[in-house]
Length: 267
Length: 303
Image (tube, rainbow over all chains, first blue to last red; front, side, top):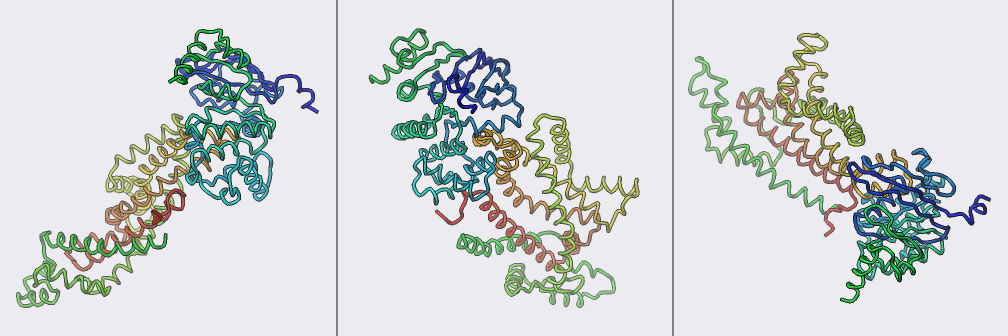
């Protein structure tokens, strides 16, 4: 089996990735790798380029931005060499993504059940009824009560935390191997943030997911990730196991971020 | 929902009374007299006075209005001064002729507007989009009467493709082109706005092919403002019919309206005004209904 061959090699290798928007180099020569089932935090301030890295991994950089160099090897294949049609079969099926704002990331005119089921129909070729049943099952997996009934509801009928649960159910719909979570808790209330983090941990184990967690919050990195990549102005300033980076930060930028966090925590 | 629409229908009553009040008095403010038709040395003053009394024109205007309103409540809109036929009959005869022009114009506009607006938005800045933008602005800058006359000049007078009057093609073309320009712009900008939304990126992220992203996720949202605009543009369509039918001598309600105004045929003018008002209000109600069908966030009457 392919899985056995790849067991010991990293699931994702990103090499010298650069993304350019007109006049701005948003991401410059970023390299990192991710083992199967591992959790990597990508930390940095807003505008540091961390979300751009996430979109680049999905090849969803909107023009006029574009990926100018590098390679993204996922499951042994360079995603940058895939055609648009081949990439469509990777997105959602093998690599999924959840976004910062669950209020705007769900389509207001379709039921949540439909928004989960459509991906299942397309990627797994299931019929309407079977795909709907799969959608309900995913909603149950993210602990939405009365999932069967709630699947018929529209996004505006859910609270913020519930919508993020729906987004997670949608991301898990086709059993992907890698989940990219782009600031998934930033738009939520503090108490809800914790619930979502716990839910992500739970589904990571249940679905055997590798996770890339993008955040500006070192507290979340500490709670959730094994390794961390610190990004500033589109470049990697520091990388390593979270415990090591937090206790002995090597770069001045990381120290500055950590100091800021400590001051906030003290107050 | 049903309660909401019944309420809306009941609100029609004061609205229609208001419309009738204003149009009746404005109509009587305009100079001229229906009996001017009889200005003829052979008509004796007594005869003229008898006709005026017969039509109620010897009464003060407000009495005339109340008489009209009383009869209108019984669906009696009087008789045309010129033909002597009941107004209802006159309108019933002309309405299908107008609809023969309006319905295809409306459908053709929709059939062209939606795909052209969508493609323009998706291929923003392409030669297709630039051409469409140029044509829309040109179209919007042209008044209907001028466009109608120019089309007539080109296709009838110069090329002899169609007869200048009594043919469906040219008035249909004029009406469609006039509506097309503005609506295509609306569809394009509605679509552009939706394409920038987060849920479009999320739809791509779950691996939906571009075709599904555009025609399912984006278009469905972009139709919401279009349904509203369509409801609001129906009065334009009606107003346009007055001009276009007159230019092309199309024997519909618009032309009847213009003729009645020139002849001060008060009962017919009032009949047409009331009938158009009713149609427009109903069209708006249907637009509201359509709105709630395309947007699940809107459920009328649920506070």
